Length: 267
Image (cartoon, rainbow, N blue to C red):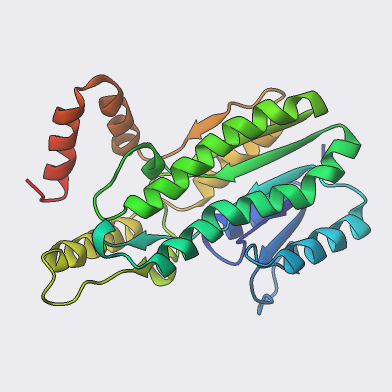
C-alpha cells in the first residue's frame, strides 16, 4: 500500500538512498534539504531546515496541502563531530544537538497533529550504533544519538494511544558524505589531545569511505514501514560493530573499555 513519506536530510547519503528506494517501491516520497535540490531526483522535494521553526512549519504545511495526510516521518538529518570533550567549543556542541536532537523534536511537533487526526502514523528516527557506547573523541555525537534512542522510546509510549508508532534505526558505518559535513574540534598544536584527534578523524574518514552502501539502511527502513508491529530499535551496522554491542552487554565494563581503547590505539 502506497504511503506518503517525509524524509529530512535527503540530499545525500542515507536520506537520498532511502527516498529513491521508497519511491521505486511505489510510495509518495518527499525528500527535504536545507537548500533547494540542484538536480533532478525521482521524488518530490521540499526545502526544509530542521533548525528553523518557520522552515519546518512551511514545509510540513505544503506537504499536507498537496497530499492531505502524512503516513511516515523519517528523521534522518544529522551532524557528526569529532573532538576531545575538554576542548570542544560550546558552539559546536550546540550545533550538533540542535540538529540531531532539537531538530528531530521540532519535526515531531510539526507532524504529529496530522498523524493524530488520521489515527495512525509512523516516526522513524535515524540514531546510531555510536549512541550505545562512549566512543573516544566522538562523545558529543554518541550522546546526541543516545538521546535519539531514549526520545524514540518515550515517543512510542506516549503516542501509542493515538495509533502512532515510533522506532529508531541504528546504523554503523555507512558510505555517505558525512566526512565532508562533520565538525572537527581540532585542538591547537600544543594540546595533549592533538595527535589523537587527528588520528581519530583519519580513522573515521577511512572507515566511512570503505563502508557499505546506504541502500541497506533503506531496505531496513522499508521493512519497518511494512511491519504491522515494528521493533522499537533496529540495529543495522556491519557484523563487527553489532558484535561490539553484544560484547558491551556481557563483558565487564572495564574490560570492554580496555578493548575499545585498544581498537583506537589508546592503551
